[in-house]
Image (cartoon, rainbow, N blue to C red; front, side):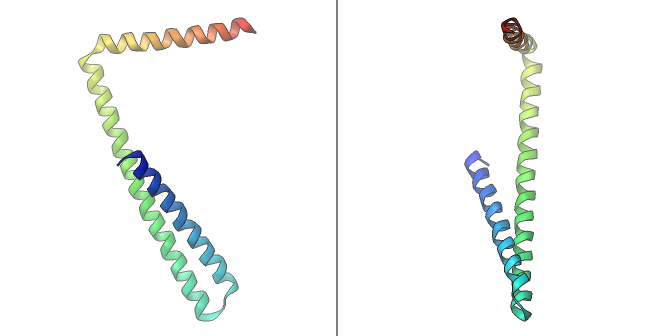
Length: 104
């Protein structure tokens, strides 16, 4: 799932919960059958939003696992390259921290 699809799904979930909230607020002021129907619709919207959120959670979990696996494979296939990159990042971070401390 692409980033734009994830963002769209997130916006849809937000919209579902907003609609559910409005329906439940309206149900609290309405009476009788109308209140019961609004409450039922609001609860259904919330259930739909929760289901979509669980779907996004699965996508995020699967993406994280795939990223971890590809990183693991890369590091195992190129250990010296991985060490060099890690060392360069550490040196750059140390340099930045050293400069920041020296300015104080």
